[in-house]
Length: 161
Image (cartoon, rainbow, N blue to C red; front, side, top):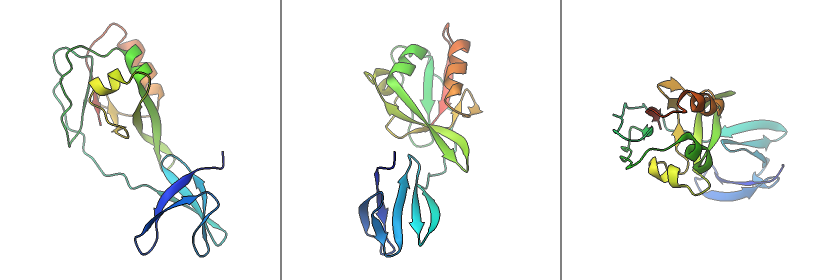
């Protein structure tokens, strides 16, 4: 809605908090803030600056015997949950925000919401990015709804984080 702020490093590497409309350096102003990038105005020309996302290679994680939702990533194994996570719990306890690169959804950034129990049980951390669900690249938040019907009666589902 035209507001927001960002922490931006100048050419000297010093980081500063800058509000929309404020000058970052002479001739450069913060124009807009989005969840995955900022737009600056450099002497009348708009430029988008994206947060560099580390490249990760999803690693197959063996599914534990009980839970219907399993996550995994190349840097940390996901804990084995004592009981499964249902899609209803997933919807209420995990927020999904599309990550957009070059105009297309490349993942879902997760955040805790509601009680956060399913979020913690799955071993997720604020800002994790789900890049694959059931071995297929994420195309958007609709992937979650599509799978909800498919796994309504339970089953194991893998995610790459």
